[in-house]
Each structure stands twice: as C-alpha cells, then as structure tokens.
Length: 232
Ligand SMILES: Nc1ncnc2c1ncn2[C@@H]1O[C@H](COP(=O)(O)OP(=O)(O)OP(=O)(O)O)[C@@H](O)[C@H]1O
Ligand SMILES: [Mg+2]
Image 1 (cartoon, helix red, strand yellow):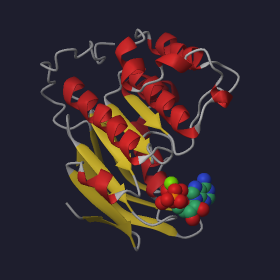
Image 2 (tube, rainbow, N blue to C red; image 1 turned 180 degrees about the vertical axis):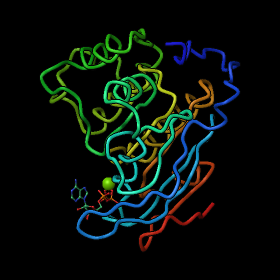
Image 3 (cartoon, helix red, strand yellow; image 1 turned 90 degrees about the horizontal axis):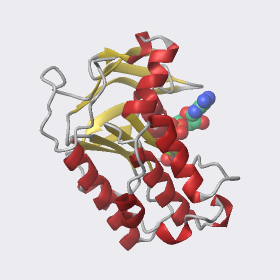
Image 4 (cartoon, rainbow, N blue to C red; image 1 turned 90 degrees about the vertical axis):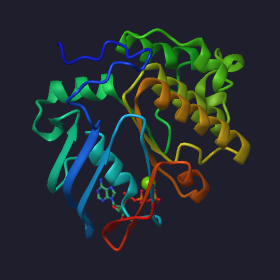
C-alpha cells in the first residue's frame, strides 16, 4: 500500500532506496538455442538504455524478461528493489499495471474500440486522468473517435504510446516504438518520451534497429553472440 508512488508530479520526490528503478543480474535464457548468458544491467530514474542487435538475437525476449512477462531460466530481475519473479501473481500484476508501461513491437490496442476508448480504458484501470496534453503531443486529437482499424500504422503506434503514458509508468519498455513512423515523426515521438522520463523521474528501456535513435539514449548495448555488449 505505502509502496505506491504518489504521483511524482514535480519530480522532487526521490525515494532513497530506489537508486535504480530496474536492475537485472546474471540473466540467461534459451528457447531452442541459448539466447543470451549472464546479462546484467541497471536503469536509474531519468536514464535511458537502448538495445541493438540483429533480428532473432533476443531483444524482445530480454524486454519481456525485464518487464515481468517472461521468467528467465536463470538470474534475477529487480524493479524498485523487488525481485519480480518472487512476487505473487497478483503483486506482479499490480506492479505491471501501475509502474510499467510496455509498448510492444506490434500494438496491442483493442481493435473494436475507438482511440478514445482505448486510452480511457488505461485511465480507468490505473485511476489516472487522461492527459489532454498527451493527445496533443502525439497528434491524435483529431482521430479520437475513429476505430483503431481505421488508423494508419504510425497513428496506431502513437495511440499506443499515448495510452501507455496515460498510466504514468515509472519504467517504459518500448520495442521498436517508431518502426512505423517516418523519420521526422519518429524523432518527435521519441523526444516526447524523453521529456516524459525527465519530468517524471521515469526510465526508458528501448529496443530499436535505429542507431541514430539509440544514440539519444544514455547507454547503448548490443546483443551479439549470446552476450550483451556495452557500446556506450
Ligand atoms: N515464446 C517463444 N517460444 C519459443 N521461441 C521463442 C519465443 N519467443 C522468441 N523465441 C525465439 O527466440 C529468438 C529471439 O526472438 P526475439 O523475438 O527475442 O528476437 P528479436 O531480437 O526481438 O528479433 P526482431 O528484431 O526480429 O524483433 C527467435 O529465434 C525466436 O524464434
Ligand atoms: Mg523483437
């Protein structure tokens, strides 16, 4: 109960024992073949990490492991000092719902719903008001009444981002969030995400193929030959 964030609106509250928001130690995972071994990294408030790597190197799998969705074969993941794979299911769900925002490689919007309803759902679930500013930032104000299926891929991605940020998450996990956007829009969108993490003392874990985009992050890693190699 008292572990909840009380809307870090001005960014001044800095929990003493939350020096990092995310930390993983010695993560190894394999499906049909070993994906990666002994991966460790950490993410502090206002920090961003980019993960590069060829298709199939395990970037999305790592993102899933760090964001509570996939238990690794080996290793530990801590979100705000909690070992997430030791939590009970309901505690994990609460953490996922309230403190984590995930933007998937392919969007998970509700197709039968309008844009507004998709965002409203997130607002209801997390009891956080819809931020009109977000709708403006992502330039989706004029498509609020359209069904998701009536939108372009880029619009869908921007709605996904607006929906996730409506939750006011502490850690944003984004898997190729700008894959469907032209360069200019991609830049604008990602700038908004950086502004958000700075303002809210949040953090960003970004999977991307785009080297320029990765350069905007504080740290860059590459998944290569089953290892996570630091490049910046
Ligand atoms: N749930 C699963 N069950 C079995 N194998 C899986 C599963 N998820 C991923 N894999 C396999 O793990 C490997 C890494 O997949 P992953 O999606 O993590 O790669 P990626 O680096 O994100 O690739 P891309 O850049 O194409 O998105 C692939 O060979 C994939 O087939
Ligand atoms: Mg992927």
